[in-house]
Length: 184
Image 1: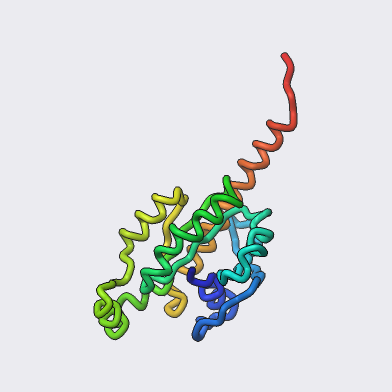
Image 2: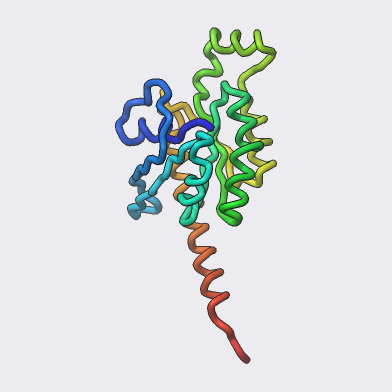
């Protein structure tokens, strides 16, 4: 899965992440304005390596929204959303809304990379295929971004905040209605 750190770095520092550095468990905060009010998004970037399969679910317990990110120039990364990440999060986070995010969209135009993919009978993941994937996993949204170009990065976190806030209010109402018994 594409690392959320790659899209978080330009939001926090204004500079895109250089190269890939696998994370273990990184916590980030993103401050946003929602309807004129400040919102602080707490984001956990969890390790994707198999060594952390037992630890990763511990970080899912308070999730209000999940971002399943993939690299649009890596068909393997794309397939992992459906084959690996969706089964895991749907098991541990049954009612948590999902946003699927296609990353590195600027590289769709990288001729060297596209030619390398074609030599292996592959191609970059299209926006349409990303949307289809999002629908197939029941995601509430499909978004794309380029951290390198700062394209659509803020929109992803804005959408995540909106989804998280609406999810929290639905869950609060569900807990309230399940906690009280009304007798008439």
